[in-house]
Image (cartoon, rainbow, N blue to C red; front, top):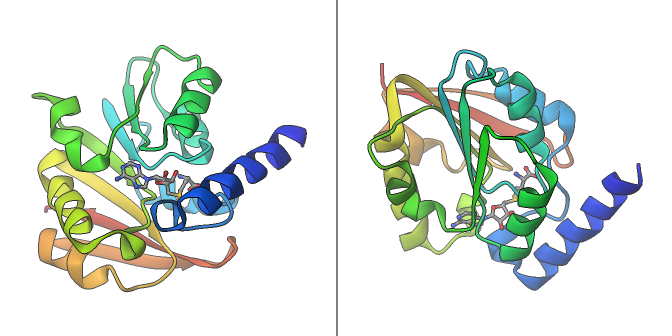
Length: 187
Ligand SMILES: C[S@@+](CC[C@H](N)C(=O)[O-])C[C@H]1O[C@@H](n2cnc3c(N)ncnc32)[C@H](O)[C@@H]1O
């Protein structure tokens, strides 16, 4: 309970310091995270990539679903949040990287992700940065992989449809505000 409140304050502090980069005043709810991850097969994945981890609400649920020999690479641009994630998730399967999602290629090397989980605030990012990150997503995925995205509006849908052959979407009401969830594939 105390950790939950502290995380909300940390998150709010990060938002106040950099509103367009954080894009939300509260972390995503656990129920919305579960709805989001239900749209991809995390238990079968060898490699999961998480973009924009914040205080780690998705990280925790990904690790709960991830197999014992699988890996999670988590990118978070805010150094204070990245440090918190590194300290919080003492798990050999996870690698926390403090860098921008646009540089994902450099951290993947030859590897490709079976699942990409993105909680980046695309609509408030500078357009060039948004485009560079969206362009990274399809080429980061393994064949048969899925990218899941959470947003507070449907505005990103045309951009996702340009880059993926299939985009399923739904709304989860279990979040403040209710959130749009997208599952994108190259079938
Ligand atoms: C809306 S918050 C989501 C946080 C958390 N995943 C959640 O759902 O509560 C967006 C997060 O993305 C991070 N972020 C923003 N731009 C980024 C970028 N270019 N690369 C990596 N992380 C970024 C922010 O620092 C923030 O932690």
